[in-house]
View 1 (cartoon, rainbow, N blue to C red):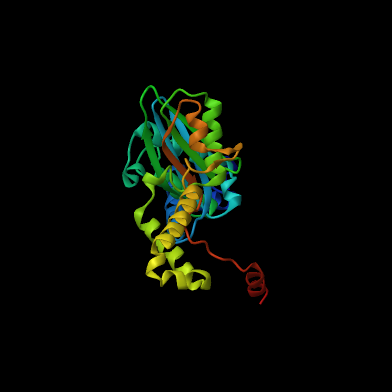
View 2 (cartoon, rainbow, N blue to C red; view 1 turned 135 degrees about the vertical axis):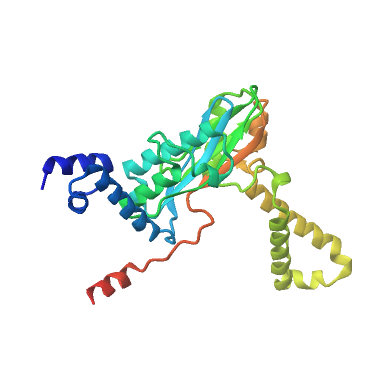
Length: 299
């Protein structure tokens, strides 16, 4: 066994010692062939992880001039999300997306990173090395005018990212406060104009069904003379819901006497675009019974 060759191969591929030794043995100490052998084995290993559920990872938002990108890269566990190689890959992906202007995720996965690997290949490569599914889940590139500003916030756990576009050169501290509010309070929409009508209709039906099942309201709802009052109650509940799910209507966390809109309007500004990513949102997580897993392994 040539120790120096093993060292060189590991530096080239980041492979483990045993894998490097096996690759060199299979390829008669040819470094290039051994590197390719490891890559092919890695791709095959990564393919087995394709169906894995990856709900952890990193969300981030970065800007450069009049362009910003907010993006999410997923892995399977918190442990890998804190891995230096994973973090480095996420940073490289973010910068590459920002520079590209590419809005199609399939095409984005073919963009070249700083190491001359495509985003897709780099994810597959790290999946093979770490043993967890890694992939670019989503992203959005947003532009702005010269007289507007971006405000970004990434929570300390790297799982929540917020990107705001504000139609003013308002004090960055004020803008940052709004971004941090959005990160903490998780509004679904910027304002009532952006609310999904299907979602709102469904929520209104839920309110009506709850009232129908409540004896306090059931008799009123069957009385035609009470229709106006019932509609008023329903609209009141809908408006309360909208005040909870829209950024502008939420009470500002630093001053509950104001809504977010009132706070930023007081500084002669308005939020014109709001995007918030939280890692894993919308993905059904696998429930793991660790006790059962340990018991099964003991058996």
